[in-house]
Image 1 (tube, rainbow, N blue to C red):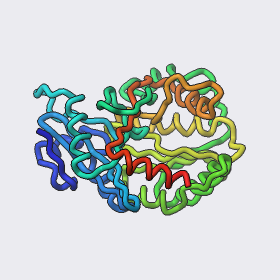
Image 2: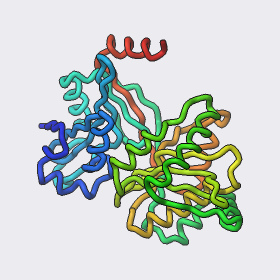
Image 3: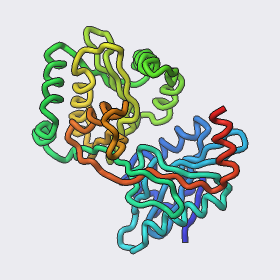
Image 4: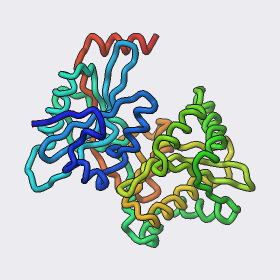
Length: 311
């Protein structure tokens, strides 16, 4: 039988003691960060599995997003994962949630009934490999770009608050290329303040001028590449070099895996996403495949929301 709690503090100790073996989306810092931006984090668990759910409220609508897949905290008990997911969706419907879906950070290897779904995945590097093995798996063009940027004097800084202003300037430039506004300073300040040491901002500089940047959510289990940015004409190889340095840094401090977060399977080569995916793929990580899915639990409210959104 599944149980739901609406606070990290209410998770039973036998489950909470295993949280440190799970990714950042199960942790207390992520829960506090989400609450600070008015997003509730709920937890549903049974005898073997637990999952965290972000619950959003917009006007009269309530919907939920899975930032992560279920995690098994007791593998001595045989419980069906798909049955667990089915029960989770059913419970969310009983709680008044109108639709539920998965985000790019979640890697579900199964999906519930009546879901709309597409194949999805992420390129993930195993940081338990030696630095030499990881380097060897990187595409030769990426390796050349990394060497070029290093030779050109690009350096990487990883700090907190002090890098936000430079990052936001590049973020505005990046989104302007798509005709959209950037996230804004407060967005990234909330991340740094909320996640504390589990949020890392990294920026590549050439002669003190920022060239490219990245934001990571990270704990011992996984470093997630959540946001990326660059100026219009960065020093060639800056972003490649940034990721290589972060791979080495996270490996050094004991992080187990490095996720490039999000890959559309069989993406059209003419799509704007193709270049982004090729960039991620060429770092040589394993393509972990699964599904991105959505279940509509209240059709009338969902389609009303979509109509308002389009307007």
